[in-house]
Length: 399
Image (cartoon, rainbow, N blue to C red):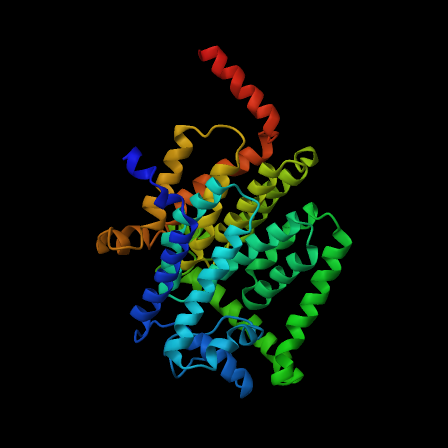
Protein backbone atom coordinates (compact mmCIF):
# COMPACT_ATOMS: atom_id res chain seq x y z
CA UNK A 1 0.00 0.00 0.00
CA UNK A 2 2.80 2.42 0.92
CA UNK A 3 4.48 1.78 -2.43
CA UNK A 4 1.18 2.33 -4.24
CA UNK A 5 0.54 5.65 -2.47
CA UNK A 6 4.07 6.81 -3.26
CA UNK A 7 3.46 6.63 -7.01
CA UNK A 8 3.98 9.99 -8.82
CA UNK A 9 0.36 9.91 -10.06
CA UNK A 10 -0.87 11.02 -6.64
CA UNK A 11 1.35 14.12 -6.72
CA UNK A 12 0.83 15.25 -10.32
CA UNK A 13 -1.28 18.42 -10.54
CA UNK A 14 -2.02 17.80 -14.22
CA UNK A 15 -3.61 14.42 -13.53
CA UNK A 16 -5.64 15.91 -10.69
CA UNK A 17 -6.87 18.75 -12.89
CA UNK A 18 -7.95 16.31 -15.61
CA UNK A 19 -9.75 14.25 -12.95
CA UNK A 20 -11.56 17.34 -11.66
CA UNK A 21 -12.68 18.35 -15.16
CA UNK A 22 -13.90 14.79 -15.86
CA UNK A 23 -15.95 14.89 -12.65
CA UNK A 24 -17.48 18.21 -13.75
CA UNK A 25 -18.45 16.94 -17.21
CA UNK A 26 -19.75 13.53 -16.13
CA UNK A 27 -21.86 14.99 -13.31
CA UNK A 28 -23.41 17.47 -15.76
CA UNK A 29 -24.24 14.74 -18.29
CA UNK A 30 -25.75 12.45 -15.62
CA UNK A 31 -27.96 15.22 -14.23
CA UNK A 32 -29.00 16.84 -17.52
CA UNK A 33 -32.51 15.38 -17.72
CA UNK A 34 -33.07 14.86 -14.00
CA UNK A 35 -35.90 16.62 -12.12
CA UNK A 36 -33.42 17.74 -9.44
CA UNK A 37 -31.43 19.79 -11.92
CA UNK A 38 -30.72 22.98 -9.96
CA UNK A 39 -29.24 24.62 -13.02
CA UNK A 40 -32.79 25.27 -14.25
CA UNK A 41 -33.41 27.51 -11.24
CA UNK A 42 -30.10 29.30 -11.70
CA UNK A 43 -30.70 29.86 -15.40
CA UNK A 44 -34.08 31.44 -14.87
CA UNK A 45 -32.76 33.84 -12.25
CA UNK A 46 -31.14 35.73 -15.13
CA UNK A 47 -34.17 35.61 -17.43
CA UNK A 48 -36.58 36.56 -14.63
CA UNK A 49 -34.46 39.63 -13.84
CA UNK A 50 -34.51 40.58 -17.53
CA UNK A 51 -38.31 40.24 -17.53
CA UNK A 52 -38.53 41.78 -14.03
CA UNK A 53 -40.42 38.85 -12.52
CA UNK A 54 -40.42 37.89 -8.86
CA UNK A 55 -37.29 35.81 -8.19
CA UNK A 56 -38.67 34.10 -5.10
CA UNK A 57 -41.82 32.33 -6.26
CA UNK A 58 -42.12 28.69 -7.38
CA UNK A 59 -40.61 28.08 -10.78
CA UNK A 60 -42.91 26.47 -13.36
CA UNK A 61 -39.75 24.81 -14.78
CA UNK A 62 -38.97 23.07 -11.47
CA UNK A 63 -41.94 22.49 -9.21
CA UNK A 64 -41.44 22.31 -5.49
CA UNK A 65 -38.28 24.40 -5.24
CA UNK A 66 -37.37 28.05 -4.93
CA UNK A 67 -34.48 30.34 -5.71
CA UNK A 68 -32.69 31.59 -2.60
CA UNK A 69 -29.87 33.54 -4.26
CA UNK A 70 -29.65 37.31 -4.43
CA UNK A 71 -30.47 39.43 -7.52
CA UNK A 72 -26.73 39.86 -8.20
CA UNK A 73 -26.60 36.13 -9.01
CA UNK A 74 -28.30 37.00 -12.31
CA UNK A 75 -25.04 38.65 -13.44
CA UNK A 76 -22.97 35.65 -12.32
CA UNK A 77 -25.14 33.09 -14.12
CA UNK A 78 -25.74 35.23 -17.25
CA UNK A 79 -22.99 33.69 -19.46
CA UNK A 80 -24.37 30.20 -18.75
CA UNK A 81 -28.04 31.18 -19.16
CA UNK A 82 -27.81 32.65 -22.66
CA UNK A 83 -26.40 29.48 -24.25
CA UNK A 84 -28.27 26.16 -24.82
CA UNK A 85 -29.08 24.35 -21.59
CA UNK A 86 -26.76 21.37 -22.11
CA UNK A 87 -23.77 23.56 -22.92
CA UNK A 88 -24.59 25.98 -20.12
CA UNK A 89 -24.79 23.16 -17.56
CA UNK A 90 -21.44 21.66 -18.57
CA UNK A 91 -19.72 25.04 -18.62
CA UNK A 92 -21.25 25.93 -15.24
CA UNK A 93 -19.90 22.77 -13.61
CA UNK A 94 -16.49 23.25 -15.23
CA UNK A 95 -16.39 26.87 -14.08
CA UNK A 96 -17.25 25.94 -10.49
CA UNK A 97 -14.54 23.27 -10.57
CA UNK A 98 -11.93 25.66 -11.93
CA UNK A 99 -12.79 28.28 -9.29
CA UNK A 100 -12.09 25.73 -6.58
CA UNK A 101 -8.96 24.53 -8.36
CA UNK A 102 -7.57 28.06 -8.69
CA UNK A 103 -8.46 28.91 -5.09
CA UNK A 104 -6.55 25.91 -3.76
CA UNK A 105 -3.60 26.14 -6.16
CA UNK A 106 -2.99 29.86 -5.58
CA UNK A 107 -3.21 29.59 -1.79
CA UNK A 108 -0.22 30.08 0.50
CA UNK A 109 0.09 26.37 1.21
CA UNK A 110 2.80 23.81 0.59
CA UNK A 111 2.47 21.23 -2.19
CA UNK A 112 1.67 18.58 0.42
CA UNK A 113 -1.12 20.72 1.86
CA UNK A 114 -2.54 21.53 -1.58
CA UNK A 115 -2.54 17.89 -2.66
CA UNK A 116 -4.17 16.88 0.60
CA UNK A 117 -6.97 19.43 0.08
CA UNK A 118 -7.53 18.42 -3.54
CA UNK A 119 -7.72 14.68 -2.81
CA UNK A 120 -9.57 14.89 0.50
CA UNK A 121 -12.17 17.32 -0.89
CA UNK A 122 -12.68 15.53 -4.23
CA UNK A 123 -15.72 13.57 -3.07
CA UNK A 124 -17.39 16.64 -1.56
CA UNK A 125 -16.71 18.43 -4.83
CA UNK A 126 -18.44 15.63 -6.73
CA UNK A 127 -21.44 15.82 -4.39
CA UNK A 128 -21.77 19.54 -5.17
CA UNK A 129 -21.30 19.01 -8.90
CA UNK A 130 -24.14 16.50 -9.06
CA UNK A 131 -26.36 19.29 -7.68
CA UNK A 132 -24.62 22.08 -9.65
CA UNK A 133 -24.31 23.88 -6.34
CA UNK A 134 -22.81 27.34 -5.89
CA UNK A 135 -21.48 26.09 -2.54
CA UNK A 136 -18.29 25.15 -4.40
CA UNK A 137 -17.80 28.83 -5.18
CA UNK A 138 -18.73 29.83 -1.61
CA UNK A 139 -15.85 27.78 -0.21
CA UNK A 140 -13.50 28.91 -2.98
CA UNK A 141 -14.33 32.62 -2.57
CA UNK A 142 -13.65 32.49 1.18
CA UNK A 143 -10.31 30.80 0.50
CA UNK A 144 -9.47 33.34 -2.23
CA UNK A 145 -10.32 36.21 0.13
CA UNK A 146 -7.87 34.78 2.66
CA UNK A 147 -5.16 34.32 0.01
CA UNK A 148 -5.55 37.85 -1.33
CA UNK A 149 -5.39 39.24 2.21
CA UNK A 150 -2.19 37.28 2.82
CA UNK A 151 -0.71 38.66 -0.40
CA UNK A 152 -1.61 42.23 0.61
CA UNK A 153 -4.13 42.53 -2.23
CA UNK A 154 -6.99 43.87 -0.13
CA UNK A 155 -8.87 45.22 -3.16
CA UNK A 156 -9.28 41.71 -4.59
CA UNK A 157 -9.94 40.16 -1.20
CA UNK A 158 -12.91 42.53 -0.88
CA UNK A 159 -14.01 41.62 -4.43
CA UNK A 160 -14.25 37.92 -3.58
CA UNK A 161 -16.06 38.60 -0.29
CA UNK A 162 -18.65 40.90 -1.88
CA UNK A 163 -19.19 38.69 -4.95
CA UNK A 164 -20.07 35.74 -2.74
CA UNK A 165 -22.05 37.75 -0.19
CA UNK A 166 -24.37 39.28 -2.77
CA UNK A 167 -25.13 35.79 -4.09
CA UNK A 168 -25.47 33.71 -0.91
CA UNK A 169 -24.59 35.86 2.14
CA UNK A 170 -22.28 33.24 3.70
CA UNK A 171 -18.98 34.56 2.24
CA UNK A 172 -19.46 37.68 4.36
CA UNK A 173 -17.51 35.72 6.99
CA UNK A 174 -14.42 36.65 4.95
CA UNK A 175 -14.49 39.95 6.81
CA UNK A 176 -12.85 37.96 9.62
CA UNK A 177 -9.58 38.33 7.68
CA UNK A 178 -9.73 42.11 8.07
CA UNK A 179 -7.59 41.84 11.21
CA UNK A 180 -4.76 40.29 9.19
CA UNK A 181 -4.88 42.88 6.39
CA UNK A 182 -1.72 44.95 5.90
CA UNK A 183 -3.80 47.97 4.83
CA UNK A 184 -7.05 47.90 6.79
CA UNK A 185 -8.20 51.24 5.40
CA UNK A 186 -7.88 49.93 1.83
CA UNK A 187 -9.67 46.73 2.84
CA UNK A 188 -12.62 48.68 4.27
CA UNK A 189 -13.06 51.06 1.33
CA UNK A 190 -12.65 48.20 -1.13
CA UNK A 191 -15.56 46.44 0.60
CA UNK A 192 -17.65 49.60 0.21
CA UNK A 193 -16.69 49.94 -3.47
CA UNK A 194 -17.46 46.34 -4.43
CA UNK A 195 -20.69 46.36 -2.42
CA UNK A 196 -21.91 49.32 -4.48
CA UNK A 197 -20.87 47.60 -7.73
CA UNK A 198 -22.64 44.34 -6.83
CA UNK A 199 -25.77 46.18 -5.71
CA UNK A 200 -26.02 48.40 -8.79
CA UNK A 201 -24.91 46.01 -11.55
CA UNK A 202 -28.26 44.13 -11.97
CA UNK A 203 -30.01 47.50 -12.27
CA UNK A 204 -28.23 48.08 -15.60
CA UNK A 205 -30.36 45.41 -17.29
CA UNK A 206 -33.52 45.74 -15.18
CA UNK A 207 -34.44 48.77 -13.05
CA UNK A 208 -33.47 50.25 -9.65
CA UNK A 209 -37.03 49.91 -8.30
CA UNK A 210 -37.23 46.25 -9.30
CA UNK A 211 -33.85 45.29 -7.80
CA UNK A 212 -34.51 47.10 -4.52
CA UNK A 213 -37.86 45.32 -4.29
CA UNK A 214 -36.19 41.97 -4.96
CA UNK A 215 -33.75 42.51 -2.10
CA UNK A 216 -36.74 42.94 0.19
CA UNK A 217 -38.27 39.75 -1.24
CA UNK A 218 -34.95 37.96 -0.77
CA UNK A 219 -34.96 38.85 2.92
CA UNK A 220 -38.45 37.41 3.38
CA UNK A 221 -37.58 34.28 1.35
CA UNK A 222 -34.53 33.58 3.53
CA UNK A 223 -36.57 34.19 6.67
CA UNK A 224 -39.21 31.68 5.52
CA UNK A 225 -36.54 29.15 4.56
CA UNK A 226 -34.93 29.47 8.00
CA UNK A 227 -38.26 28.76 9.70
CA UNK A 228 -38.80 25.70 7.49
CA UNK A 229 -35.31 24.39 8.20
CA UNK A 230 -35.90 24.66 11.94
CA UNK A 231 -39.35 23.04 11.91
CA UNK A 232 -38.78 20.16 9.47
CA UNK A 233 -36.88 17.32 11.13
CA UNK A 234 -36.36 15.55 7.79
CA UNK A 235 -35.32 18.68 5.92
CA UNK A 236 -32.38 18.39 3.54
CA UNK A 237 -31.11 21.55 5.21
CA UNK A 238 -29.88 22.34 8.73
CA UNK A 239 -27.37 19.50 8.57
CA UNK A 240 -25.32 21.35 11.15
CA UNK A 241 -24.49 21.39 14.83
CA UNK A 242 -27.60 23.53 15.27
CA UNK A 243 -29.54 20.83 13.42
CA UNK A 244 -28.23 18.05 15.67
CA UNK A 245 -29.37 19.91 18.78
CA UNK A 246 -32.70 20.91 17.26
CA UNK A 247 -33.53 17.40 16.04
CA UNK A 248 -32.54 15.70 19.29
CA UNK A 249 -34.56 18.10 21.46
CA UNK A 250 -37.49 18.37 19.01
CA UNK A 251 -37.96 21.88 20.42
CA UNK A 252 -38.63 24.74 17.99
CA UNK A 253 -39.31 27.37 20.65
CA UNK A 254 -35.76 28.47 21.49
CA UNK A 255 -33.54 30.76 19.43
CA UNK A 256 -30.40 29.45 17.74
CA UNK A 257 -28.63 32.52 19.10
CA UNK A 258 -28.23 30.60 22.37
CA UNK A 259 -25.63 28.52 20.51
CA UNK A 260 -24.43 30.94 17.82
CA UNK A 261 -23.38 33.66 20.30
CA UNK A 262 -21.21 31.32 22.44
CA UNK A 263 -19.62 29.98 19.22
CA UNK A 264 -18.78 33.54 18.17
CA UNK A 265 -17.29 34.25 21.60
CA UNK A 266 -15.14 31.11 21.40
CA UNK A 267 -13.97 32.12 17.93
CA UNK A 268 -13.26 35.68 19.08
CA UNK A 269 -10.97 34.54 21.90
CA UNK A 270 -8.38 33.47 19.35
CA UNK A 271 -8.23 36.98 17.93
CA UNK A 272 -7.15 38.31 21.33
CA UNK A 273 -3.95 36.27 21.02
CA UNK A 274 -2.32 39.09 19.05
CA UNK A 275 1.15 37.63 19.59
CA UNK A 276 0.08 34.63 17.46
CA UNK A 277 -1.08 36.67 14.47
CA UNK A 278 2.41 36.75 13.02
CA UNK A 279 2.45 32.98 12.46
CA UNK A 280 1.02 31.70 9.19
CA UNK A 281 -0.12 28.37 10.76
CA UNK A 282 -2.26 30.36 13.22
CA UNK A 283 -3.83 32.40 10.42
CA UNK A 284 -4.48 29.22 8.41
CA UNK A 285 -6.26 27.74 11.40
CA UNK A 286 -8.38 30.90 11.63
CA UNK A 287 -9.34 30.28 7.99
CA UNK A 288 -10.37 26.69 8.81
CA UNK A 289 -12.29 28.00 11.82
CA UNK A 290 -14.19 30.52 9.70
CA UNK A 291 -15.19 27.82 7.20
CA UNK A 292 -16.31 25.37 9.90
CA UNK A 293 -18.30 27.94 11.90
CA UNK A 294 -20.10 28.95 8.71
CA UNK A 295 -20.98 25.30 8.16
CA UNK A 296 -21.89 24.26 11.71
CA UNK A 297 -23.91 27.29 12.78
CA UNK A 298 -26.19 27.85 9.80
CA UNK A 299 -29.70 26.43 9.47
CA UNK A 300 -29.21 26.45 5.69
CA UNK A 301 -26.38 23.89 5.75
CA UNK A 302 -27.06 21.07 3.29
CA UNK A 303 -25.03 18.16 1.96
CA UNK A 304 -23.44 20.31 -0.72
CA UNK A 305 -22.35 22.83 1.94
CA UNK A 306 -19.78 20.28 3.11
CA UNK A 307 -17.46 21.43 0.36
CA UNK A 308 -16.34 23.88 3.06
CA UNK A 309 -15.43 20.98 5.35
CA UNK A 310 -13.70 19.27 2.43
CA UNK A 311 -11.06 22.00 2.39
CA UNK A 312 -11.28 23.24 6.00
CA UNK A 313 -10.40 19.90 7.60
CA UNK A 314 -7.18 19.37 5.60
CA UNK A 315 -6.22 22.98 6.38
CA UNK A 316 -6.74 22.37 10.11
CA UNK A 317 -4.82 19.11 10.02
CA UNK A 318 -1.79 20.35 8.06
CA UNK A 319 -1.55 23.88 9.49
CA UNK A 320 -0.43 22.74 12.93
CA UNK A 321 3.33 23.23 13.41
CA UNK A 322 3.33 20.25 15.78
CA UNK A 323 3.01 16.56 14.93
CA UNK A 324 -0.57 15.35 14.73
CA UNK A 325 -1.41 12.39 16.96
CA UNK A 326 -3.44 9.26 16.31
CA UNK A 327 -6.61 10.89 17.66
CA UNK A 328 -6.32 13.63 15.03
CA UNK A 329 -5.85 11.03 12.30
CA UNK A 330 -8.88 9.13 13.59
CA UNK A 331 -10.98 12.31 13.55
CA UNK A 332 -10.03 13.00 9.93
CA UNK A 333 -10.89 9.43 8.95
CA UNK A 334 -14.17 9.62 10.88
CA UNK A 335 -15.08 12.90 9.14
CA UNK A 336 -14.46 11.37 5.72
CA UNK A 337 -16.02 7.94 6.27
CA UNK A 338 -19.02 9.02 8.33
CA UNK A 339 -19.33 12.59 7.08
CA UNK A 340 -18.36 12.87 3.45
CA UNK A 341 -19.50 9.37 2.47
CA UNK A 342 -22.67 9.24 4.59
CA UNK A 343 -25.06 10.41 1.79
CA UNK A 344 -23.76 7.72 -0.60
CA UNK A 345 -24.97 4.18 -1.29
CA UNK A 346 -22.18 2.86 0.94
CA UNK A 347 -24.64 3.40 3.77
CA UNK A 348 -27.92 1.43 3.65
CA UNK A 349 -31.01 3.55 3.04
CA UNK A 350 -32.39 2.53 6.42
CA UNK A 351 -29.37 3.96 8.25
CA UNK A 352 -29.49 7.13 6.14
CA UNK A 353 -33.23 7.71 6.49
CA UNK A 354 -33.73 6.58 10.10
CA UNK A 355 -30.49 7.55 11.83
CA UNK A 356 -28.13 9.88 9.96
CA UNK A 357 -30.58 12.25 8.27
CA UNK A 358 -33.18 12.64 11.08
CA UNK A 359 -30.47 13.65 13.54
CA UNK A 360 -28.20 15.57 11.12
CA UNK A 361 -25.37 13.26 12.17
CA UNK A 362 -23.22 14.15 9.18
CA UNK A 363 -22.26 17.23 11.22
CA UNK A 364 -21.05 15.21 14.21
CA UNK A 365 -17.42 14.45 13.17
CA UNK A 366 -16.98 17.98 11.82
CA UNK A 367 -18.30 19.40 15.11
CA UNK A 368 -15.83 17.28 17.08
CA UNK A 369 -12.95 18.61 15.00
CA UNK A 370 -14.22 22.17 15.43
CA UNK A 371 -14.17 21.79 19.23
CA UNK A 372 -10.57 20.55 19.06
CA UNK A 373 -9.61 23.31 16.64
CA UNK A 374 -11.12 25.91 18.98
CA UNK A 375 -9.10 24.52 21.89
CA UNK A 376 -5.91 24.74 19.82
CA UNK A 377 -6.60 28.32 18.74
CA UNK A 378 -7.03 29.38 22.35
CA UNK A 379 -4.19 27.46 24.00
CA UNK A 380 -1.64 26.24 21.46
CA UNK A 381 1.56 28.01 20.40
CA UNK A 382 1.83 28.30 16.60
CA UNK A 383 5.45 29.46 16.56
CA UNK A 384 6.99 27.06 14.03
CA UNK A 385 10.53 27.56 15.31
CA UNK A 386 9.56 26.92 18.92
CA UNK A 387 7.53 23.86 17.96
CA UNK A 388 10.50 22.43 16.04
CA UNK A 389 12.76 22.86 19.10
CA UNK A 390 10.20 21.16 21.37
CA UNK A 391 9.78 18.29 18.92
CA UNK A 392 13.54 17.68 18.73
CA UNK A 393 13.81 17.77 22.51
CA UNK A 394 11.06 15.14 22.82
CA UNK A 395 12.78 12.99 20.21
CA UNK A 396 16.02 13.10 22.26
CA UNK A 397 14.18 12.10 25.42
CA UNK A 398 12.68 9.07 23.71
CA UNK A 399 15.90 8.12 21.91
